[in-house]
Amino acid sequence: MHLIVLTLFILALVLGPGLWVKAVMARYNHPADRYPKTGGELARELLDYLGLKHIVAETAESGDHYDPIKKAVRLTPANFEGRSLTAVTVAAHEVGHALQDARGFRPLKWRTRLVKWVGPIEKIGAGLLMAAPFTAAMTRVPFLGLLALLGGLLTLSSSTVVHFLTLPTEFDASFARALPLLADRRILKPGDSPKARRLLLAAALTYVSGSLMSLVNIARWWAILRR
Image (tube, rainbow, N blue to C red; front, top):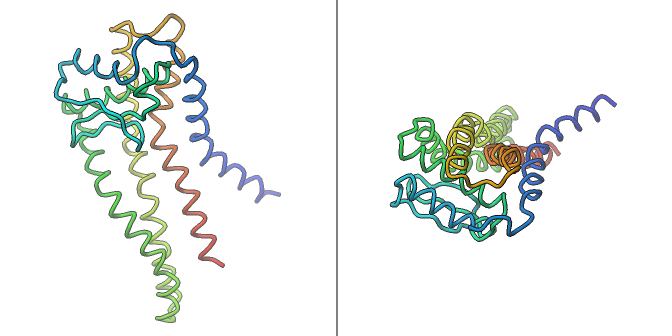
């Protein structure tokens, strides 16, 4: 019984934030025509207002994000073309990252460097996991297989660690950049400010929730390799 409760608690801890983020984003995606400008148009307006005309605003299927290398605010087609509260708020959040970049916000620079390392590290982790059973079988030393297994699990969870370490960058983009911008430009309709705060919190937690979801896949690897 205790094991079941513990399992449910861990699942809630890992899956809960992601489900909450999706629910908030979906909730304020209606009505779809609440604002006169699309998320893409608002992003462009805010970038121009901030004097960041060199930064482009474009669509991306890979998710809403700011690319500090290409100097681009990228929004999903739904948010780029949408006129909902979700669309305009997410656009403001990503512009917040562009403002961080323009003003030399150091945590964003650290995050950019860390993210570059995550991809190769995760590939190494996947390789270690794949090699773990073969290492143990070929060397007939279970300890080596266990080391490979643990190394794989640790490296695959690196993205979760990175996003937790860079969480202050997300909160700054939401509440120290985007929210003041929305207020200064009087973008939000009456009564939408508390909703926008929830959306900005969800935007700040998006990467972390995605990383937590990836822990489920790591748990699956562990279960498969233990068989």
